[in-house]
Length: 113
Image (cartoon, rainbow, N blue to C red):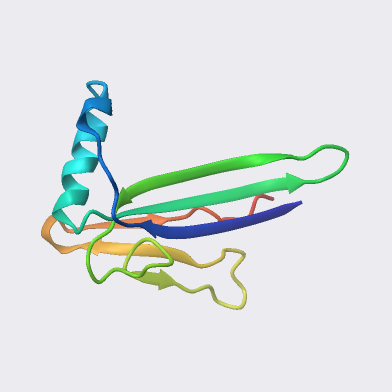
C-alpha cells in the first residue's frame, strides 16, 4: 500500500461570481483570496493505494486561503517533527495568536495501523 501528500498554491485565479450558485463558502473563499493576492492553497493526501488487482485508494484534501509569507509547499507556518521513537510523521501547524488557538494538519501524520 502506498500514500503521499502534496500542498501547492494556486495563483491568478479567475473568479466568476455568477457560478457561486448561492454558496456562502464559495463567496467567502473568493473574497478572502482576493484580499490575499488572489491566491489559494490546496492540500491533497492519498492513502491506502494499491495497484493489484485493481487500482484503489482514498483521496482527501482541503482548499483554503494562502497568506503572504506562508510556506508554499505545506499549509501552516511550522512543521512538527517526529522523534526517533514516534510512530507519527511530520505535521504542519499554525498558531493563531488573536484567538489563542492552534491548528494542526494531521493528514498523513498518523499511521494507519
